[in-house]
Image (cartoon, helix red, strand yellow):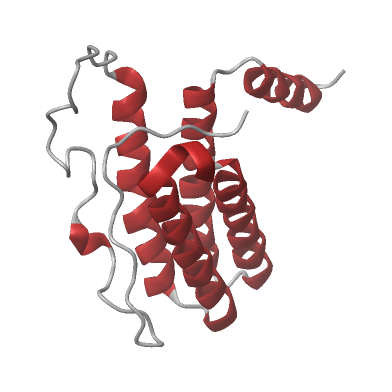
Length: 170
């Protein structure tokens, strides 16, 4: 088995043995990496590289979307789904029109979301109380400046996600 095969096996094993939080962070890391690689490919006029990296990012975002548990996730799942759809649209625009700004917008969405997920998974669990938790509604929300107020069709874009209770399908 050559070195590249060991690396592939290591990656498969890392994914297979990771917990849910770690998997989500790995997916965001991949989406961010491939988006940056697509930008780099654009800079080098590498159309095939741009397209391949955008497709990989779209695949990851689609997987994140499919993993949402809309029954248990409540409002946050609905908002994340909307944000993922917007991101896919921006990636498509970037691919078709070689639009760097669309890729920058994707990064402005993915990086704060990844940071929010990391904060959720690394902070200690909150104590159970008899009433609703007393947290700021925007405790883990990325800044509202990450997205334009409307898309090219004039439709409103979704607001950034807020910290709340949700689960992913197993």
